[in-house]
Image (cartoon, rainbow, N blue to C red; front, top):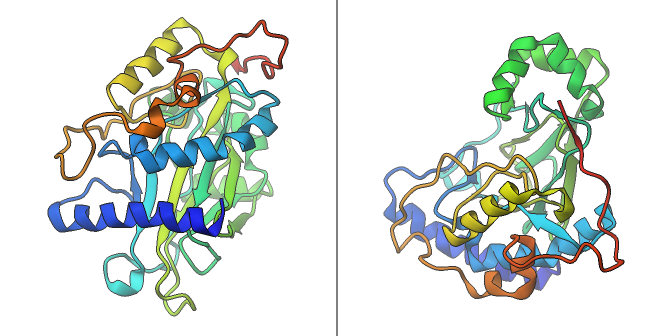
Length: 296
């Protein structure tokens, strides 16, 4: 995205966030991530989703994609006292893909409306960890069983050390303003708070999460799920074609903090296609993308 687009989108989120903080005793937010208040259906979120769709088209080799309706991450500068600074040993390393999925099922995406350096609120991965996804669940069977119920799995020190012993070193991933970072959903990853004394003391965290996968992977039930999520203004996890779930953090929202109806950007032809409301023609001679991934 251009600097102007980033400033426009970030400004929209920041204005809303300021109202949210002033009118909410306890915000639904975890480590700066917000997956409620229907934020995934805000007009700004839909604009970003549509703007970055060409990135996923390039990756999957098809324009026929479905989207997640995931959340955002937003945090005021830690220097304001409204957010924490980084502490020694701070780690939230986790997986978002459970044991039932084998191989590549999705690329998760994060669009950065503010620059992020290794001194800011920074994205981190365990380099090469996607190659050890199945082996991890074999080494820790209880983790596999837990991931059958909830695909999010946070590591303890032993589990993180196991990846390190397999050569997966912790790597920070700086992202420029307007950039998008993508990662195989088998990748162990987290985000870490800013360093005290960083150069850019007025820098917010402002990120929009987006993931898209080939529409041809979706079955009848998957499409029905998407249609209902669209009609209900519901938030979903990052899965967009198969095995989708609504976020448990959904709630009835105060009009001041949320929206009551679908915004203009979500009612376009392209938006309806990526939510399965309008259907793609898989027999038009245009690429449909790779075959559906494997499940155990």
